Length: 500
Image (cartoon, rainbow, N blue to C red; front, side, top):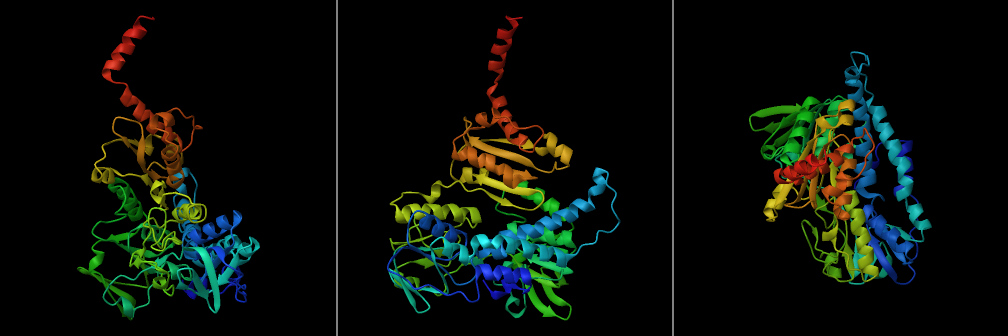
């Protein structure tokens, strides 16, 4: 993470820096062997360090850049703060649908929206601060960690010995191989939130969650946004029907969507950055690269510790153990699930396995995810494509939000819920939610999978009326209707006729 993440150096970012990388921080003197040395103070590292210390372990925590990692500084926190501002803009623009008269033009103060984001980020940062972790009894070191051998490392001139170590250094944006990209200035998530002026013309390469969220957000804030996708289109790893809803929502917000991003070429011109794509050439003021990630492995000297890695990250087994049985890894540096909540629970498993002879398996984690466009898109468990690939037969149930009363009342009818169960049973294997609060609604299905509650059980649960969550019960009702076969219905009809 570069120093640009803390620009501009206004009072909010100065407060952030004082928490996540204090300028005058004094590294402690190591005292004996540590039970656990944690490298990296992003989500996985912070959870691992605090959990281990809370259980009585002697812990050291090392961070070379900003404590809090991507999530706090250049990821979840700033992006969701900015998304919140953009959603208010959209709500005001469409207020006439609800009988509210608004001016013809909505004035947007981009600088104020960004200042709000920086303030909120600084407000949250004490929870991830060096000072807080020191107060937990953890030795906090700021600097580059470098392994010396299988049981020790150094930070600057200080040598730390350990019984176990955890590598939680995360990942960062990777620049794709695009002709001319190395000769222009472009944005990644590490620099995007340092903007103080709204780009009038904004191109975004990559239509994954980050690309889609920021395309909609900046379009709502007033940029002319072009979103460049691969041949597979918007959110290519999601349910195609769900992705189509998001595609339509982006276009409705004025985002221009172009395909064949693999053909992109860029160069600097007098009008900004010129992009050439197939038969189209156009200029923009800013280009955001939102595609590709690479693990943060530089400077660690992994070979000295006997830890193997590839270009995709550190090699770990299902218990997060590296090729050195005393060293573990968690989070984006070793996982395909690059989400804050995934890093959190991987770190919990790591502490169990490293310090307490645990047998916790990463493959047992049920990991949902959400894209915070409007409408939101959330997923947990298997999709039909994954089920087919694995040879698992499923039954699927779909409930459109247009038939959920709260969605109708709120005007949030775009979207649906799909639930996939093991064929012939009500065992939930996966679910997709597209709509308002999808990131919250998916939690019902995550809980059901974890606790082995079937669709029948969800149908028997009472939800307040009217709420968006009522859609969860409705998907259970869909399952129950399939159990009422014609034969069973005839039997019940004859039985009831005898009781008239």
